[in-house]
Each structure stands twice: as C-alpha cells, then as structure tokens.
Length: 88
Image (cartoon, rainbow, N blue to C red; front, side, top):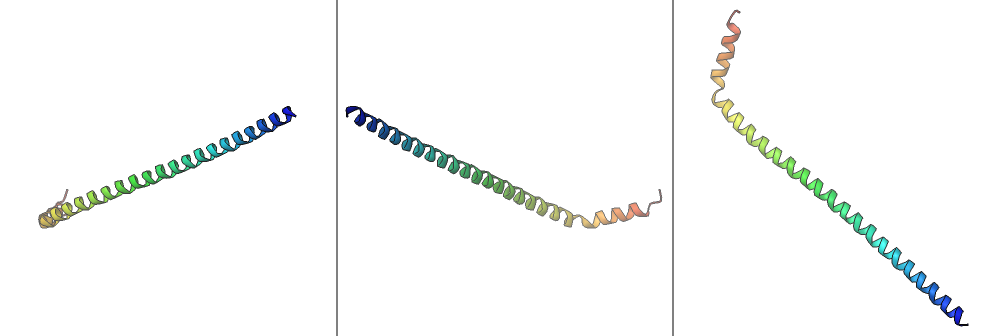
C-alpha cells in the first residue's frame, strides 16, 4: 500500500510541475508578444517623428525659397528673357 501512495504523490507532483511549466511558458510567450508590440509601436513612432521633422524642415525651406524667389523674381525673369533673345 505504501508504494501506491508514493506513486500517487509522484504523479501529482509531476502534474503540478507540468502545469507550472505550461504556465511559465504562457507568461513568457505573452511577455514576448507585448515586447514585440512595444517595439513595433516605437518604430512607428520614430517613423512618424522623422516624417514630422522632414515636413517641418521642408516647410521652412519652402518658406525661405518663396521669400527669396519673390524678392528677386523680376531680375530673374528679365535675365531669362535676355537669354532667349540672344542669338547664339
């Protein structure tokens, strides 16, 4: 009879160890999944930040270019017209 009790105890410990292992594996998978989501979100955020910076810089550059172009448009137009009139 003593052997039967010991066998039941071993099988219950084995079942408990199996449940614990499955639980640990499930937690590890969940953690990896969350880490992957966070990494993907951070990458998207970095891309959005880069796009914003490019957009801001582009707008600044366009503003400066427009300003420069409007302040000297007449001499440029005259110069281009003069080049067209020259017979090469």
